[in-house]
Image (tube, rainbow, N blue to C red):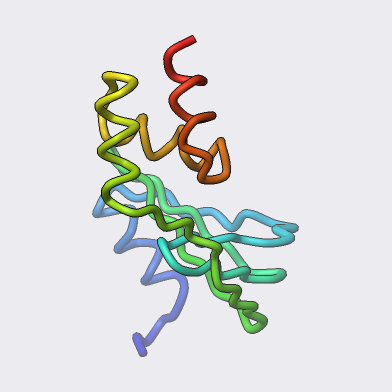
Length: 112
């Protein structure tokens, strides 16, 4: 820990061109990954703005973790929708997600 505490830290941040402020009354921060979601409840969030970027520091003592429902489709289904609708792989996957895995519905939604 530095002697002088916050005052020295603020001086260092000023020298680096960072402006720091506390964002008050934050209810929740959600972090989503491919397989799970993290809910940070009542966190303290500090925003540090630089010339070209912004950094957020999040401090939370209460964290809830939930698994995400990641739809999986057979490769053959994706290829079939891609070929039949003449679209990219990403569009085919999104159409299958929207159609809840129904290939016929996915192809129809992409071609009409």
